[in-house]
Amino acid sequence: MISTLEIPVHKTTKSRLAQVDMNHLPFGKYISDHMLVADYRDGEWQAPEILPYGDLSMPPAMLALHYGQSVFEGMKAFRMADGNVSIFRLEKHYDRLCKSMERLCMPLLPQELFMEGLKKLVEVDADWVPSQEGSSLYLRPFVFASEERYGVGPSNEYKFIIFTGPVGPYYPQPLRVKVEDHYIRAARGGVGYAKCAGNYGGVLYPTQKAKEAGFDQVLWTDGSPELNIEESGTMNVMFLINNTLVTPPLSDTILDGVTRDSLLTIAQDLGYQVEERSISAFELKEAFEQDILKEAFGVGTAAVTAPIQTIHIKGKDYSVSDYNEQSFCNQLKKRLTAIRTGMEKDVYFWNTIIQK
Image 1 (cartoon, rainbow, N blue to C red):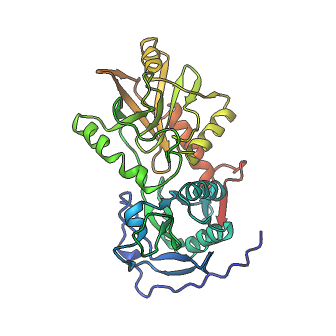
Image 2: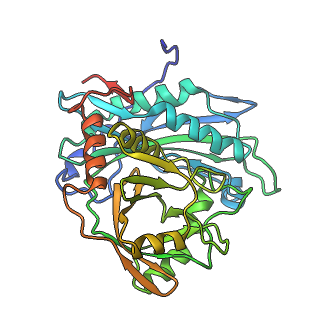
Image 3: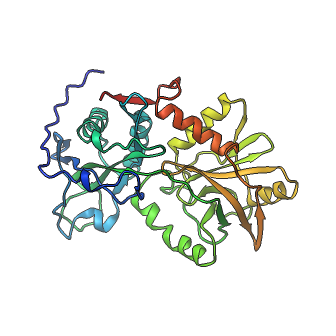
């Protein structure tokens, strides 16, 4: 597709790049020099522009602050072996953002605005894409209700913004998680499948309580007597039972993870059987007792895969064997990383290349 979208760029006169140690990049600390901004008003999306990153001016009565019309995406761009930059799975992220916006009564973004806006912003701040192994440029597109009004109802005005920031490799220690049997992350018919701000605010308290009890995260369930597993913290979750990769099926309570979809595709191509089906905490308990639960791991944009060492089920700990470089979750991560960085051919056409 040939773009007809003109995006004016107003470059900063004071880059902050020299202040960043690319060898030490805590997740979420650094923000690149520029941001893309576009407004929705009078029934249509206005032309975007790229500006120096900076504060916004907003009224206290802005609707997003009161009624939660706010959605976002979490994406990454990678420095490739040839020096170019690749943005991972643009189309998939656009489709998911549209689903979130539709659920929250927002006017959909034109695809060209999303795609060309991201490509142009990454091109402008290409020097911020780290080349260190395991590092990447995190991309945060988001949309929120910007109308100044405090009556309940969908906003008539919105703001679309993208900012980016370099992040380092994420090497978590194997996690100790608790099957949550009281709080739930999402309910049937709700907004669990949408990437909206409220979903993340709502999990903070149960997660904090779990950490106070000595756990790193919680395994969310559907709240049923069967305790069917749904997600792990803010990630999707997968289990290797014998040689079958099992993950909960997508529903209106589970986020359609881009990393989840990518790893399922790779696993199938590696010859593993994949099952997207319900799996209860009690089935996990039986799998532990039969010594057939080989691995458990969260999957998401930040970590790609986060191995789970211990699962706490109804008052008892169950542990997975130790992980190493040859563990299945680490092999999946290596394969996906190789595709993203051009070390392996992108047979899935997942990468959008920004020429250096």
